[in-house]
Length: 198
Length: 198
Image: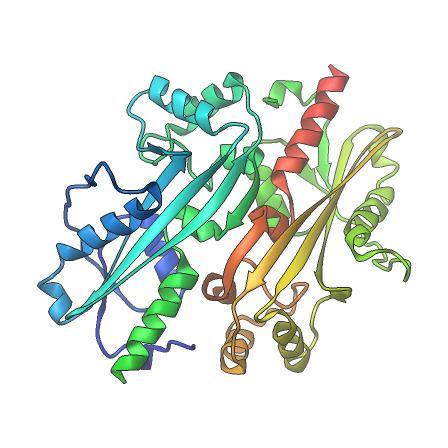
């Protein structure tokens, strides 16, 4: 399970514009380039919440069908859920406050689905992390929203932000799943794929 | 639970030379200075493994008895255990390999004990994280030891290192407990202490 540069006979493309995903993939030691495409991020209304992230990762990878003939494509999608409710990005201070109130004092789920596509092979996998926030008064939530403006993040918080340092009491799962890329899963699946190409 | 600079009426001193602890405490937004002293890090042979980190944090804080009259002292200690076995720092490649073989394919415990000392008040608390590594062949362990030289870290690995990205399948607890400072616990205890001084 040591995936060396010499093994990377087929180029790897990360199909994501997220700087966090780019950094995490770089930290695994793999060589890759980044290519982004816009994808409609809707999902069927009857899809179970634990399947949405994988569905969207797959949809993103489908947009790279042409590139997947010559390269291995990796895409990912992260979905934050409280019970059956999916939290997207907040657009206003009020929306962010409503979301953070839902998360405070409770455990929620963060799913990151990945899709790896190469020629006619499509690998889908999902990692889940249970994230527990301490009870936090509005004073804390408002302070965070005012100082960090978390409007680019699903669920209105970033795992590396101040509110997570002081408010998260436990994660069950991978920290990197919450950051947006389950590196252990990506590495294991890419290792298997590259090994099969040797 | 919003601990503002205005509330920090008594200076805070971090009694640790660890750059990771310094960074994490800074990320909580608190003002502090750093002061280090050497402490003998022995513990009684009959101490239960889940009490060693708190015992050593307390011992470190005792060395700041004089400073604790005017300042709040925060110290911490991190202990890595596999079952009843405590893993210290490895000194040689062979020792590091032996430790990592013990960790591979299993769940181990990382305890970080903290001690907060101010005048006659002494607060002790411990956070634990269960860390699970995938099975990893010697090829992977040797590659990691050769490239990262993890001789300054208990258990011979760093939570932000390559081996953790590709090898850790799950953490149950706080990621920051494994990094060396359970920020949620430190923040909550310091909040309570500063609030009591208002």
